[in-house]
Length: 432
Image (tube, rainbow, N blue to C red):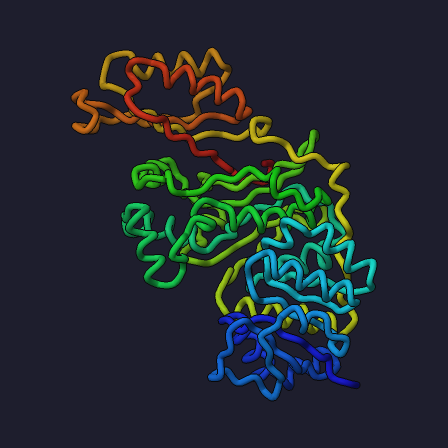
């Protein structure tokens, strides 16, 4: 059988990883794919003479490569959005299969790209776009295709997980942990997409579309980062039996689908609580398979390259299939104020008699019940108010809009001397 002719767009660390995997594992890959996978052309805006292209031709015009008729597959690994999107559209319009690791273009334009692929009898593979070395896309579209999913939850950004792990295990502040992550290469010079949740929201958009048929609706996903998490919140969570993780959650409700990215208290007994460093993990609860759990490297050249090559093998075997186009109009995404969760609250209050009672009264009047509480003295000279105490409360489940009204009243109390910290709690139990 003739080799699968691959055009590689990009020559960064992931693209170099793809070349290495194809070279190092050539014999096993050919056996599984039924033929050789041969990179015959490479295009990159920057030439890198030191990289062994294995005999492939080289050019600096990625769009010309994408439009070639003599390629079976185009691999998009240039990053960014505009040129990458144009590249993918060019190849698919030409009936050429595409493999991409670009989470942004899939999250923002996935439905259009899948429709274009279908119309031209091409395949769009994007296993590498979500959690690198974890085969979560193929699991949702193949192994779990016979299931209806109750929820999908995961730690899907390694940078945020590394930072929260450093804060928990070493007592570092957010800024110190971020600086360490940057020094080790886990965070970009501009870490905004990672620490403010945008990267995770791109990935959750894809998982929500595939798992629930909710459409690729990035703009409807609730996004909150980790920059406001303080070391004391991590310590109070520990005392209460929880670990703070930055999670992506998609959950089926009667009124629609929740899709949200934010920090959450997760029970210390739950599998997700043990996922540390830059590792990613995803758990899926399905009505037939039950709970399935996937963990591994979420980023990095070789794990991402592994996912790219996996898509190439599927295409070579003709086993690749397009995910079913989501019917976004039929499955609404719920706004965050309609979401019901338990809450962790840290309320900075002057150390005065009756302060806790007044807070508890407001919560009770809003029909919010308290599950647990911690109150202890702490000096706060920066407030100029003498002594204050952090009132720490865990509540039972309540809709976000109800909690918003209650916290507005609590914040207005004269005893409250700073911003209230609010973090959602996810039990992820057998009945949750």
